[in-house]
Amino acid sequence: MKALVVYDSFFGNTKQVALAIRDGLTSEESCETLHVSDATPKHLKGLDILIVGSPTRAFRPTKPITDFLNSIPRDGLKGIKVAAFDTRMSTADVRPRFLSTMVGLFGYAAKPIADRLAKKGGTLIAQPEGFFVKGSEGPLKDNELERASAWVKSAMKA
Image 1 (cartoon, rainbow, N blue to C red):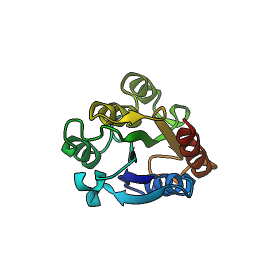
Image 2: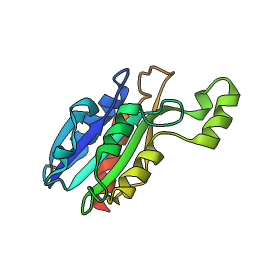
Image 3: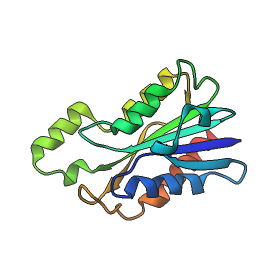
């Protein structure tokens, strides 16, 4: 199987999660990990699995991730298994509390990514997942890289 993990990252946290996801794939998959600036729709040729991740910025994915997803043609992911992830702060850590309410209303980046992947014809193999950072710039909370690896392993069994 051929897999691709596409990510955007501001402070390196989402990149670390993308690499942990790559490493969590079994040896049966050939997996490439690309920063979104290096990814194009041609990378989707012959692909079996596409996983896309972004830091959550203003309750949504970054513009480069959104632009990449928009560049995929209609039904361009037909027959491809897809999954989405983001990095985020826990609502317990968000200050002021008003932002927690906003997160409740608008959510995080992973769900809109997953929705767009499905809209492009992809088959979701996992629920969108978020991995937690300490503060707005990180680092990742303890055990998040292990959780990312376990998440993709679980998705591959589905």
